[in-house]
Image (cartoon, rainbow, N blue to C red; front, side, top):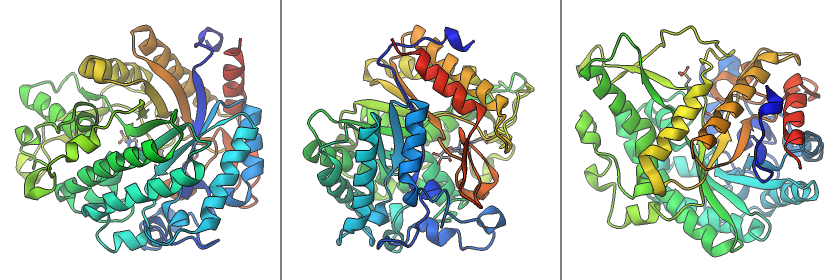
Length: 449
Ligand code: GBH
C-alpha cells in the first residue's frame, strides 16, 4: 500500500495546527482576549467546560514541537497566528512580544528545513472587534487587512507561503449561524454578511501581503470543501435542488467569488443573496478575486443532503445520513476517501483554468486515545491515495497537510477528540508519537530521491 504512493520529489508534505487549539498562554505577554477566550466561559458551550487556556502549552514548548516536526521529516508546517497576540485590541497598538513568538517559530522552522506556512485567521477574532460587531460588520475586513500588513512587515522577509483565512464557511455557519462556535451567535441565514466580510478581508490581506511580503511569496486561502451527495433512495428533482442549494452555500459561496469574481445565485434556492442590503459594494468582488497562488482545501468527508422535510422551516435542504455503512471516526464522521478524489476532480471540472494549484491544507481524523492508531493510518493512506488518483486525473495538487500534528483543543468538543499524529497527555504535557507518526515519517522519507 504505502510503497505504491509515489509523489514527485517537490510535492510538499506537511502538518497543520491552529493557535487557539495548541498555544495556551491565553493571557501572556500582552495578548488580548479573543472570542474563543470569551466563548469557552459560557456555560455549556464546550464539553466539560474545557478551555484552550493551556491547550498543548505550545507557546512554551516551541523547540520541543519543532524537534518533533524535524523527526517527522516535514517539508512544511501550517500554523496560525493569533490576531489578538499581535494586536491585543484587534487594531491600533501592536504587541511586539506577540510578534516575537512567531518570529522565533519561523526561525526555528527554517533552521529545521521546514517551510513556515502561517494562516492569518483561524477563528480567534480579537474580542474587541467582536464587541464592534465582528465579521457582521464591514470594518472588520479593513482591520484584517491592516493586521496582515503588520504581520507581513515582521515575517515577510522569510515566509514564502501564506494562508489568509481558515474555513470561512465553518466560521460563518458554526460561529454566527448556529452559535456552536465562538462568537456564539445564532443568526441562521442572517449570518450571510459574515461570508462577504471575511472574503473582503481576505482580498485586502492578499493586497497587503503582495505589498509587504517577499516578491516570491505565495498566497492561499484554506476553504473546507465538501462534495455533496444524494442517497440512492433520495434522488428526486427536489432532492437534487436541495443538494445544489447546499453546494451553493457551503462550497460555491466561497470558491466562486474567489475564482470567478461573482457570487452564486442564492435566490435560485430561496436564499437571500449576500448583495441584499448593500453588503456587497462596488468593486468588492474585484478585491476578493485578486489572483491566488493556490487554493487550500480542507477535506474531512462528503455531505449527504435530501430535500427539506419542512420547506417552510428555513433551510432549503436537510442534512442526511449515507445508506452505506462507512467506517466512522471517533467523531462519528464517515471515512470516505473517494470523496476527496471526487471533490478535487469536481473542482477542476467546474473551474477549469480558473482553478489555481490545489493544496490539501487539512485532512485527518479523530481516533480513540492510545498510540496504536491503525485506524488513523488507514484513514491517511486512503486519503493520500485519493490525492494520487486526483493527480492522475489531471488535478494539479502540490501538497498535503495532515490535521493534526498534535492532539489539541477541538473547539466545542474540548479535549475529547484526538486528531494528533502525536498523543498529548494534557496533565503532564508529555508528547508521544503514535504509530501514524512513524507511518507518515516513512511515507515522506520514501518520496526522497
Ligand atoms: C477543521 O474544521 C478545523 O479547521 C480545525 O480547526 C479542526 O480542528 C478540524 O477541522 C477538525 O474538526 O456532520 O459528520 O458530516 C472542520 C470542519 C465541520 C468538518 C463539520 C466536518 C461535518 C462532519 N468540520 N464536518 S459530519
